[in-house]
Image: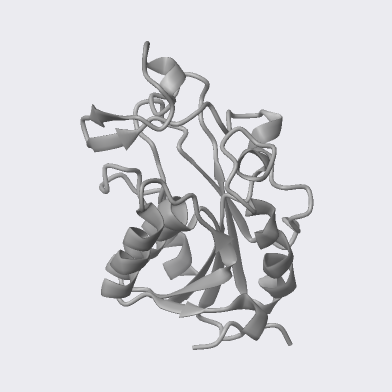
Length: 210
């Protein structure tokens, strides 16, 4: 299936100021995804942007665990959780989309991570892998069978979204040149391996430009 087909959707993950250079949880070269995303966005009949949207008291923030350091881990009821620097707080400047991102053509802006006690990497499920965001239902009602993923970060929110989409029965393609990773203790290669095992295809956004 190609991007222009009626059953295709582009899902752009968390291209927000806090994940770009100068932000609170900056991904190296994160702003480099903006140009390729903008070039291909209008090629897809269905376009979804996701937005990390945390309350200030979110339990994934190290600041809300006395004595905890950013990037350490803790156990949550749903499993191990990385404790992040405070980022993408609801309504903050850092939670806004990168100013260069063309958000106007989006059919849907999906906000995630707004429940204080549970993080949400995937665009499809909270980190308990049970609580849905509603995106799968939206895509199915739009007739989508194939999703193409871009954004930040490859080894966390993008990978989790890709794995969940594959498990839900969608055909999944990662646009590797329109993503950037964090690579926390080898997390980037591990995520790539899991995506390969689940049948996630890899392509380049530059090859979709016409």
